[in-house]
Image 1 (cartoon, helix red, strand yellow):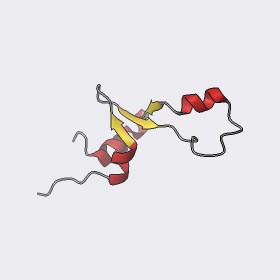
Image 2 (image 1 turned 60 degrees about the horizontal axis):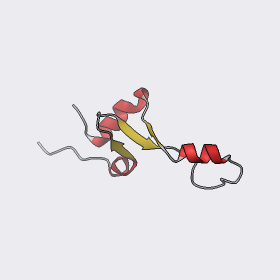
Image 3 (image 1 turned 30 degrees about the vertical axis):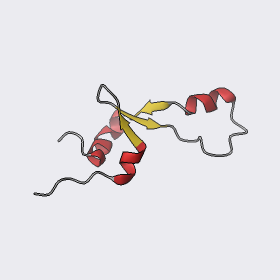
Length: 66
């Protein structure tokens, strides 16, 4: 039986935290930033956690778990 292949786009976009959760980058931080407040741009630069609804799909793409 061959090994499962990790999705190449997913391994570039998601990282695993020390506690086993999956971190992601926030959207809306690429261009047209002049209308955004400084506080919002600063907070979008930090990482967020993947929601529980999407966790199964992301784990399947990263070949984590069963």
